[in-house]
Image (cartoon, rainbow, N blue to C red; front, side, top):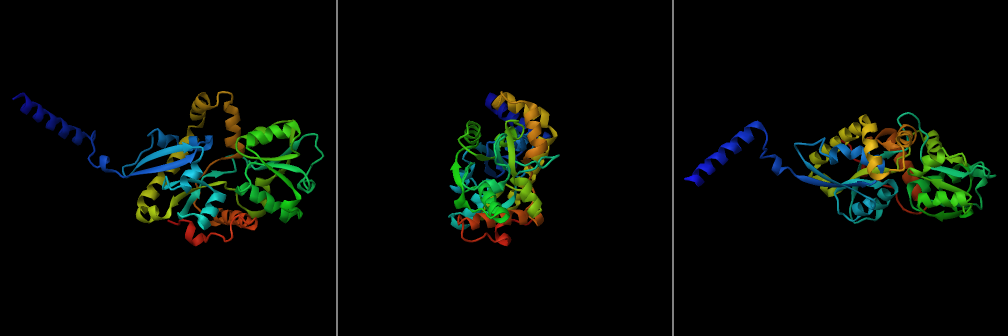
Length: 330
C-alpha cells in the first residue's frame, strides 16, 4: 500500500513540475556542442555569461573550454567549433585533413574608444631606431614566426620600406620574454602583442617605432583581426541552425560582458591576475583590443583576405582561401 501511495505521489509531483516549467522533457533532449576558446582575458569576459549559464538556449547546450592550446585542439578535431588564429585558419584551409569555415571575427585590435592597437614595434626610449627604415640588420623579436601579425609586419615592411625578411635578424620568443630581452638590450626592437603590448605602450622607458595596427588600418581601411570564430565544415552542413544559435548566444554573451565590465573584470583580477589593476584592463578595453564578433563581409572580409595574402607571400601557404567557400554567409 505504501509503495502504491508513493508511486501516486511521485506521479502527481512530476505532473506539477512539468506544468510549472520546473522540468522540461525537451530540455533533457537538447543537443550539446563543445566549443574551445583562448584562455585570455578578452575571451574570458566575452564568454562569461555562457559559461556561467546566465545566457542559455532552449535549442542547444554549450560546453565551453578556455585553453592555452585552443588552436591545436581545433586542428586536432577535438571540437567542432571555436576560436582559431587567422594565420592558422589560412594554413588549415590548405593543409588540414579537416575543412573549416569562418563565421566571424573574434579578437579585434581596436578599443571601444580608440584604435591604439596591439601589434606594435617598440625600442628603448634612448635608442637611435626611430622608424621602420632603421630596422635593417637589427635584432627584432617576434612572438611567432608564422603568425598573421608577423606576416603583416614583414609584408608591410617590404611594401612600405623595401626591406625584406632576409635583411633582418628575427628572434622568436614569447611576448613576456621579448619585453624582458628588449629592456636588457638583447634586442634592438620587439614586436609585442597580447596584454604585454599595452603595458609597454605606457612605459616611459620604451618608445613606439611602428604601430602596425594603425598602419594596417590606414592602408587597407579595416581593423586587424588576429583570430576568428570557426566551425568544422561537416558539422556546419549537418547543424546549420545550431551553429547560428551558438553564434547568436556568443553575441549576447559578449554584450553582457561589455555591459558588466567593471564587475566581471574585478572578479577576473581577484581570481587570475591579482597584481593587475582595474584601470589597466579598462585601458586595454577602451584603447587597444576586445572581442567583437563581426560577420565576415565588406571591409572585414577584405582585411582578412589581405592578411592571407601576406601569409602567402612568405610561402607559408601556396594558395589563398576562396572567400566564397570558406566564409559563412547567413
